[in-house]
Length: 245
Ligand SMILES: Nc1ncnc2c1ncn2[C@@H]1O[C@H](COP(=O)(O)OP(=O)(O)OP(=O)(O)O)[C@@H](O)[C@H]1O
Image (cartoon, rainbow, N blue to C red; front, top):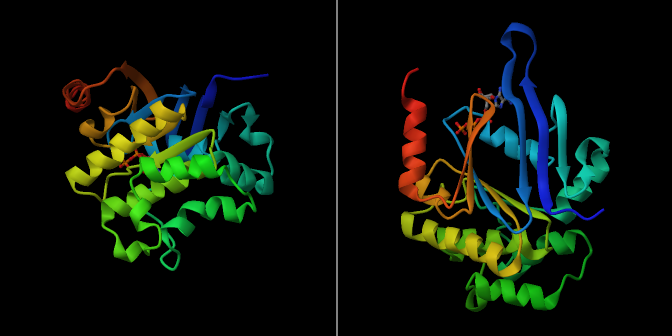
């Protein structure tokens, strides 16, 4: 079966702990992340954004419900297969860039492929290096780069293996606003020029405005979706969460 959904969760419930002290971080969330779309996940602190991302990406398991990457139901995979799926079919960009300090830019970008023993597509890698604008930095180490440049390496690395979906957790959290804008523009271009899929958790309405669609969580539930977001519209929607009911 072919799919137009890069990743999705259905009736996702995640409870941390048990009994009276249990926290229902996800309370029946169903959401799909279509192929070729840049989706931002927003919501107040503690609303379940990171939990949703971690469960959708196979970094954590659901208490009940299902998480799929492409057509693969993650609950059917043992630990080894889940590790392989994360390595081969999912890309990650984190707030802390998580580059390997002893490797060059080129080696960091190729790392997921090298770990998989895969050649990769040389044309794809070359195009990625141009998209992120790092051709003249390929032989530098991460410590010789600015924060924005390091995050651009992390973005290129996340896309290197042509994954089904790239998950980004506050990718601009450690960057000044100009570098942040560059990285977000890059994520948007990567999605639009290569029909890849990005799911990004963010607190920042300006960051969410780069997405094609924003999904809003509150108290572990999906409460709204917004297409063609602007920073002002997202900010207004977020303000509504602060009004006491
Ligand atoms: N490992 C854990 N053990 C217990 N409770 C947890 C754990 N991880 C998250 N939680 C709880 O689950 C709820 C959702 O947390 P989550 O980190 O997903 O929210 P978030 O929307 O990403 O928050 P933030 O914007 O502050 O990062 C919170 O109440 C949090 O305290």
